Image 1 (cartoon, rainbow, N blue to C red):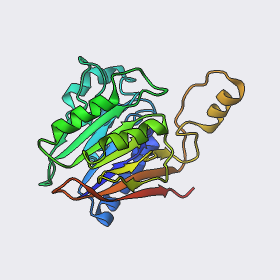
Image 2 (cartoon, rainbow, N blue to C red):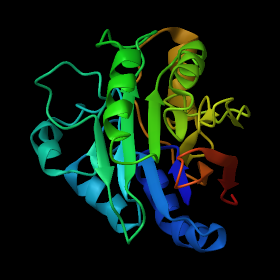
Image 3 (cartoon, rainbow, N blue to C red):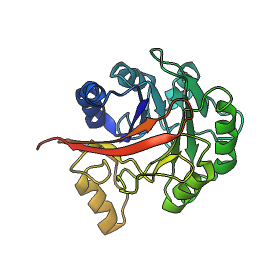
Image 4 (tube, rainbow, N blue to C red):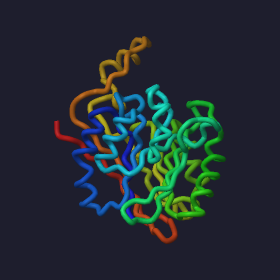
Length: 261
């Protein structure tokens, strides 16, 4: 089976890009299942129930999150009713939502989805390595097809997670930095890996935000309000070809599609 994983969707430009491109990509590449990171989908910081519904209507089957999961206060109450939205599994017990789930879609095999949050330069949550092994082992009792979103800042921590889960899941996909890396590969025990899948959002921006506001912050050291940039979008994703019997990945392919200015 083929799984499409879409990089961090940023604001309305990212959502529009998904709506405009996803159906054609599904047909062109015979995609069976679509996952996206949506933690920046509402105004560039966080997500809402309405925005999640919009993205599901566009053809996404599962959505992972990250360190901005609780940015929108209303989402704290909404997440328990959204069984296909997965927040990081290494939040402590008592946090709303789930960090891993199984999804059945259109007669395809069960797909396990796990979301993890790194700790290097990030929030001091529970250990993502312990949480990742625990959740993947639990899901493997019902399916060999498991996709892990490792939402983290440090390249080293993401690479280490790939090694930690190699052979236990189908793919470890890095998110968070919004810049697509060129290190996609199949690890020795059959797990597909990329350090960062990239961003689906404004192309002419600083990782999604208006360039002038980002420059003002970097050059003056003064706080600057985050605003999602306008203009053409970039659509970053990977396609993972998986042996649905064993869960081992056959191939991982990067996608980077930019709108014309």
